[in-house]
Image 1 (spheres, rainbow over the protein chains, first blue to last red):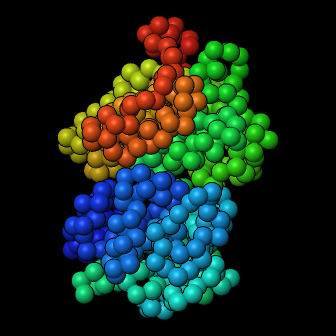
Image 2: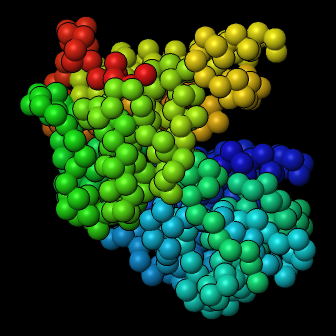
Image 3: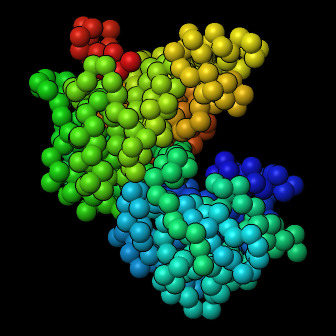
Length: 180
Length: 297
């Protein structure tokens, strides 16, 4: 989360931490950072943040989700734990921990045509994969063809962490949507 | 299409700890406890044969857990699973990496296997967390490749006073470095017994280059929130949950307290109706040979 704040502030955005419904009401866009999606689900329900976030996404609030954030934006999970819910919004099916344990976490460079050159330096940490896209658009693939970035209207979901490598082009894209 | 992927980089190792920030990591000894922890909102579990309170009570040599137990726990939850290796026991670490644990804790809670050397953690793909009681110790562990630091406290006691002492020591020493001029940092590095480059980096940034959780004696939501207010990035809870009267309720309450650590209204609410806390031992009553925090150097 700290790296997201650094990147966004560097791009001139005002950043605030959303922990309560009133925090959400005060922002124009939302970043769902990495973490454990099971924990984000649990705490957002306990503290009354789930319904307001679902409503904000439905009403068109731009959202950038990385890793667990992508999981939370998915309409469908291939392998959620019992009772796990997402906020939804992206018409995709996501598989959590798609690469295995931390041993398999990696850094790589991705060609992202929507961003042009140079390639994106991306860090995948116990990362999810997009298994199926409905009306969302795939923006990037791994060499084997797995989808790792998707976009649908103002929603941008990434399997990986561009913020860890100081990559700011996805954040710029998100802020462009926020400023519209 | 893309450059070849690289595993085990410092960024990948430290990155997982970044993702755990603000969360609670819970000791579990069975798959069922692991599921209770996950359901309560733990960001990770530590797979053990005995929690520290039992290691303390039963005595004897404490070693890496049985691989069958670790496999069971890995299979039962979707959150990261950590496991402990003895200080300096690089073969236990090789075994844990082979089992596919997400993090290895080179831990003073187990009996040390080497009273001189810690594990060379750079040689592993899996990341390590190590204990520290002060800044010099933390920086020595980071030099050896630790990707996360855990202030030690006194495990298995339910007495939070040592945890308080260690995190205050580390943050106090970081603050002292920040106020030093450049020419004083050479002596600071000598006194901390840590490499100059790391000492200079901490002086410049005002923080460790890796995530730091607090551990050792945390037993209540208020304990967890206090550690967060003192500057911890998150909390390990060992015996405090499954040695208490109502583990599921206590686990969920400690998770909420770690998130809303600066909101006394939430803390008051989540502290209610949790049943008995673990009985505990006052650290002051522990004779020196039984203090686990003294292991590691």
